[in-house]
Length: 211
Image 1 (tube, rainbow, N blue to C red):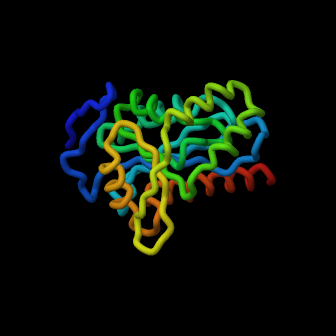
Image 2: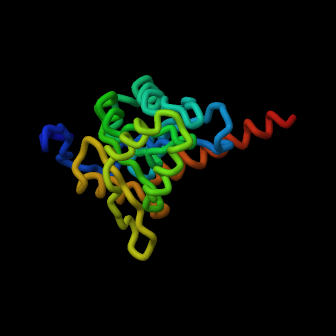
C-alpha cells in the first residue's frame, strides 16, 4: 500500500496507490459552551473513500484541556477498524476550544498519516492572543507551530478551497486523498459526517438534560 521514505530525519509514507475506497477515519467534536469546564464528545467515523460509512467511534475530551492527542489516539487504536485504516482526517487541530491535537505525535502513536482540514485559513495572530488566557500557553503554541503552515487545496472547481496540515505523508498524497473523499461538497465526506453525528449527540444530550 505504501513505502517508507525519509526527509530531513522524518519518516513518512508514500502511498504506492491511493484507491477510491481508501479507509479514512474522520474526527470532529460536538457543540460545547466555550470557556465552561466540562467534557465534549469527539466522534470518529470510518469511511471507504467518500462514499461508504463503515463504523463510528467516540471518546470525550476536556474543554480547553490538553488530552485531545492521547484520547483520539486511544480511540483509534482501540477500534476494531484500526487495522483497516490508512489515514486519520481531523477537523482542524483545535478541539473543544483550545485542546490542541499534536498531529505529529498522533502519527507517532497510531502509525497512521494525519491530515487536518479547515474551511478557512487560520489567523495565527488571533489564536496566539487567545492562548494568553490559558495555562500552558507556550506548550499549546508550540504544538500549533509544529503543525506547519496550512496549504490551500481546491477539492472542487468553482467552490471555496480548504486548507490542510499534514503529518506522516507527502503533500501530494494528502491532496489526492482529500479530493477523492470530497464527494458531496468541498469538505471530505468523513469529516462532514463526523460533524453531523457529533453535533447531533450534543443536541440529544442537551435535550435530555432539560427533561
